[in-house]
Amino acid sequence: MPLQSLDITRRSATTTPSPAARQTSEVAKLIDISKCIGCKACQVACAEWNDLHEEIGFNHGAYDNPPDLSANTWTVMRFTEVEETGNDGTRLEWLIRKDGCMHCADPGCLEACPAPGAIVQYSNGIVDFHEENCIGCGSCITGCPFDVPRLSKKDAKAYKCTLCSDRVSAGLEPACIKTCPTGALVFGSKEDMIEHAEGRIADLKERGYQNAGLYDPQGVGGTHVMYVLKHADSPQMYAGLPKDPAISPLVGLWKGALKPIALLGIGFTVLAGFFHYVKVGPNESEDEEQKEREEA
Amino acid sequence: MSRTIPRYSDHERMVHWSVAILFLLAALSGLAFFHPSLFWFSALFGGGSWDRILHPFLGVLMALVFSYTVVHFWRANRMDAEDRKWLEQWRDVVSNREERLPPVGRFNAGQKLVFWITVVCVITLLVTGLIFWRPWFADWYPVALVRLATLLHSFAAFVLIVTIIVHIYSAIWVKGSFRAMLRGDVSERWARKHHASWYREMTR
Image 1 (cartoon, rainbow over the protein chains, first blue to last red):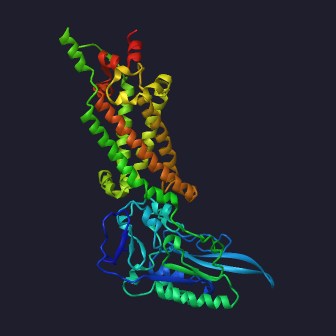
Image 2: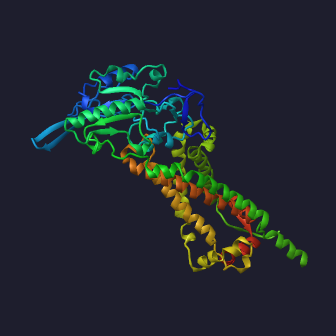
Image 3: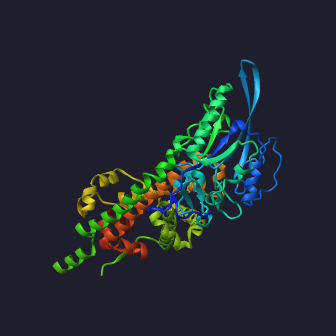
């Protein structure tokens, strides 16, 4: 949504600076998984605020509903059952993770996008899709380390969580935060959220979760959606949350080194041809023929 | 004027120029995605979305028409010892010292190289392009494969574009080649000078 237009840090497929007259402080959403009860109020609030309507699906034998993110579902609760063996025997742990865009500081989607201005990053850290510039190629899906963007089958545009950039720009908190009944979701400046998380982690450690920690992966420059995890040592337990996410080196090579090398290579080949013609000249057979005739 | 020798049949020429037109369209529509400075190429195809829609179809069509060229010409493009010698003497080639080179058949080693690089590139572009053709096929494959396919697609496109620039320049450089592909015939002088073995075969 193109609402904040003067505080843009980066635009996709753009080589000149973006409008940056205004500077805002970095924000973050903190998802405290230890407080989440899996009520899905955040999913409903997201659909309600953004006026999105998911098609009625089917029960596939788990609590996840809908089963995956889609062009109409920008956040989804993922439920994982884990058996833990401790001193007091084996017990079941139900891990519930609210999945959606992580709003990376170094966004793979923006890096991969070929359409100028289809993906922007605001100075507050929100990564937003501007669907009016989207060409529907799906490169954002290829670039994302978290498998978040979804291409709509209806209009061939990519969609994902906006971190309610429209609400945030008007000084409101995202819809999911507003609705969370347990305080598992908190929103504020990134600094404050890190501080808040530290308190929560200390509390969890006191309660025996020695591996509790903050998920703010540095491989993507940190994220503007962070998790407090009881098992921060193995985030994969939480429905495959990647341990050390980063923009894939394949994407880096494609969008990094190859672009300038290939452009220079193509330009050099054209110039080499031109200067070869200037220096060596054409390879003619008809001139010599004329010469022969004249000599005869 | 000297007599002429037929070099490319009507079929060969029409297929060549069909591939050439499709290559130009596929390359321009693809380059639009490759670098922001080239995104304006998409305007030639009706804007970004239309460019994204058309590019894969242009590419597949090019590969299909090009397959005729492969079936028709691969035998004439087999490399032999003479060709390796020709390539080793590339300095004589680029300096127009053709008299020092071994006699050339229907195609010289440079043309054969262009042929085989084009074959490899078109196959790579087709296979990798199908893998990340959204919204049709990309969802069938793991994202790591889609990423690899995208990278290889861009790289093969780069190699092919450079190869075709060399191919086009060669036609500008060696006078009479352009006419050969446009009208189908070459002068006896041209044939004797550039393709001596082929000339002997044709005039036997």
